[in-house]
Picture 1 (cartoon, rainbow over the protein chains, first blue to last red):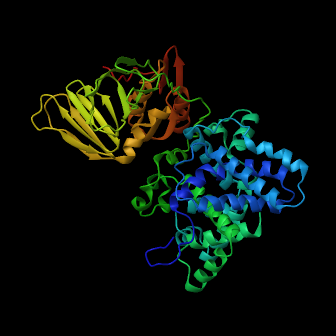
Picture 2 (cartoon, rainbow over the protein chains, first blue to last red):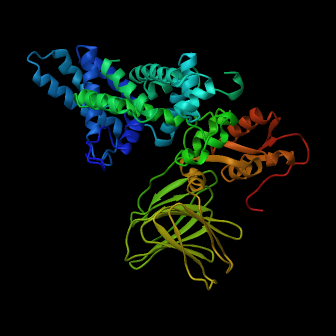
Length: 203
Length: 330
């Protein structure tokens, strides 16, 4: 892709980014969990996950995808098969575990609105769990929509510190995305005794 | 996390704080061009960064000190973020209002919903009609014309394209015509609200001489039953808010408590009563389940610190003064 000046564009179409943020990121942890059964090493899992995102990066449109979660799992399955073919020695266990990716065994994809709500709670939870200064920075930047310079001014920090804290926070969040899916977050809450937390419970 | 993921996330953060200088830009491009793993990780980091925007609250609800050129940024942020700022934890676990997809309707048919029911019905021409609570439609399909009479209530139509066969909704003296578009019509006491979410419709009143008025996507119109001028205004966010019933929600964005009570009472047998009229003008922000008036009332109690009580079919907010029950019908 070329931009108006004829430079090669790097990065994805904003629409793809938005779609991936709503339809792939929330389930990444579920996907990784399955892949861990199949792949030998954590490195291989990272590799496959990056490959999946790369496929989305190269897509022109995502309009044809009806059930994103199943689509991603199907894609993962095909990639795993490719990987196994290239390997000389096939791990028998891995071949059996492949079936786990055939059909996503969870409930059907959550309804859109319920999903949006779950995502919102999830995002807030992720921000709330950051270390203190990091959390303040993310609150300014993401909850209140301030720029880096404005955040620095608000918190009385240098811009450089704000950037470092943002990077640190993103590493933590990126790790959370890999471990905790939106759905498991919901399940965990349900098991913990009810999804609703009254506003006045002092939390 | 892999090193590549961390590198990707650092690039996304740096780019978010402003344009890179020439040297950094070159370094970024070299890194990005290394291979598909870098590029995949980069999309992932961008998408995660973008996910966090879901937490953004509307500018006018932020603490004073953090407000900035509100409009520039707020435009594309849906109003549902608002619930956070109000400090109201909506307990959203409740199930959604049932959406029933029955067989497609052909020829003439009557569609009705009861109080609190929201229904989606596919018509014979592949148009989808969504009926709000307590609504009544008469559908007649002929080869030349698709005609729907909105006898009462509110409905949204996602109209299948067919230029040879116009789609007309009649609400009393008001008619709205579309070819392939999405719009809703709600009957009010003195006229009909028309909200257009896609394409263009034409609306007119039977007695009027002014002819049809065009209403485009993102616009809201009030079309009086009497031969009076039609008012049209652009209000994309307001349309989104007003159509939240399709998902079984009520969204408040600075509506008064009195207006909110009216909205809830459209859906439920359990009626909200505001006992203290002074409370009725409090403005509220939040997203609620239309079929959970108790949750809303609990939130109001927490937010305004007023007593609430449930007696029979009434949820009373405020002191035990003279009760006045809001009702859409009176």
